Length: 381
Image (tube, rainbow, N blue to C red):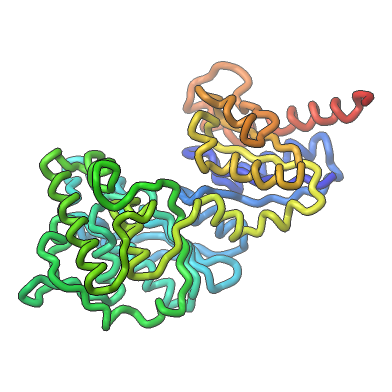
């Protein structure tokens, strides 16, 4: 029997690799001789760097960068096992959690630190970038990122625009003569699972601005500033970014990555599937085991378990999902390729106890799943 184990992390308790190791331990209680392949997964959000590094035998690195308010912090990124692909979560440098609630202001927060992470990856010889853009504190259209990579965004008197979404109002010209030349030979793919355009009622400012500290008046200003930014990008760079689905992700960083790095926006789980070569691992597999912290109505919208299941169904391989909890709407996953869902919590218990014992609980759940499979194998056809 060949079993592929490909879970996401259980947020707050298990990394994707730890979850995979727990599932393997449980399955081996029942099928000790099985061929088991562990592939930590992610969907482009939190945990993507670690999952891809773990899955490919890569390494984690730390860089000094500017946080959204311009203060120096340490931010982590990864280089995959091939030595030439970097994986970066913009939240590590420009994330909302890096800004105290009473200081959140998308008029001034910047993506400059994310640009610094990209530059660090280029300095280490990376020529492919995987960038996750969830959880941002910013609304600057990627202007800060572009400046960190050598572009000049100038006012009408030739001075650099102020940082943040508020600074875009004074943008008069974009000069990319100093943009890092290594970017021309670098492939950039962006994990983006939203389709918001840059501006308008479904755009970056209106949809995501309030959670970043924007009042209704500030939202209107940010939206107008991003529209102005898109016009300058089209005039000076010849790129139309405003209406591209996903351009509004991460406060317009989607648009900035398209404009300055020629990035391609893709589903996060699809990027990870390609990076870890999951499809190749499914060859001749008899079973796939996946999972995440909670299976709910959102799982069908680009989350890891369903992404893995859809690929497995291409080869008619049964799929079991092991999860920390089963919530409202979970039944939808059965129409999306998952054949069975198993909760690791066997009885009511405090959340902190479940988190503390998540590894052992996942082992037991995987063993139970394997025993049901064993029983099924003995039922006469």
